[in-house]
Length: 282
Image (cartoon, rainbow, N blue to C red; front, top):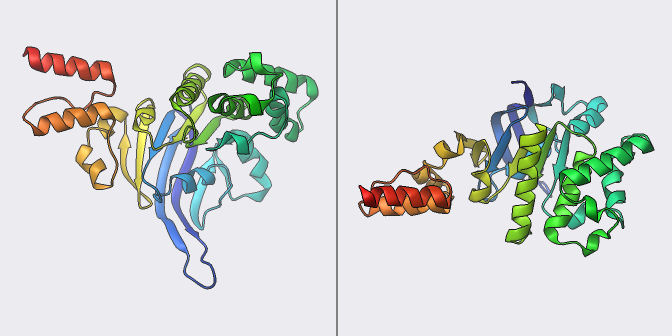
């Protein structure tokens, strides 16, 4: 499997103000994201999640070390557009990403800026809207849509540029449960059906559990990295950095403190219920 994103000895500090020292976020960060994978990045506030995400799209540039996107050095000014063609970004607030008064015009905005011809843009816009289940809203005004629908439009705008990777920085943070579910179903399908690499920055454990791989950050360092079932079994580690495991894992963990002997790799309600049934039956 080829590498989509490679972070090598990344160092980054936000500059200080009025002669105050800068704030160091990373000193020696190393991370690799494989092409076609679905990676969730977790961590508490200030751990560096969003700062890392912005390095993937050259919004921020390393103070030290390197970040490569599809083999391209993100700090190479001459290759900036190539980096951004390969990695699309979706942020928290969909209202901040909508620039047009009609849905299909908004989705066309990115490809137009890439200089793509009108007939090709038309095809891409229609295809992207179908992929996120919003084709029927193509002539609607974005401001009349729900939060989840707006975020799916934002994702469609990225898809229309045909990136190899989509980085989503807490895209469900401002959404209700229905909107969160819509967005997660959309990005999961894009990864599964289209092979698009997905990097999801989130603080929702149930969302991270849907990824193929979970990376846990704390104080600019990788604290855990692996399959969700493996990472979320490390409940004490997560608690030590003020994170929680998914609710089903937390339930099994608490019951184990009371004398139960339940597995800690049950990531959904059905698996948890089956574990409880098996324990009672035994």
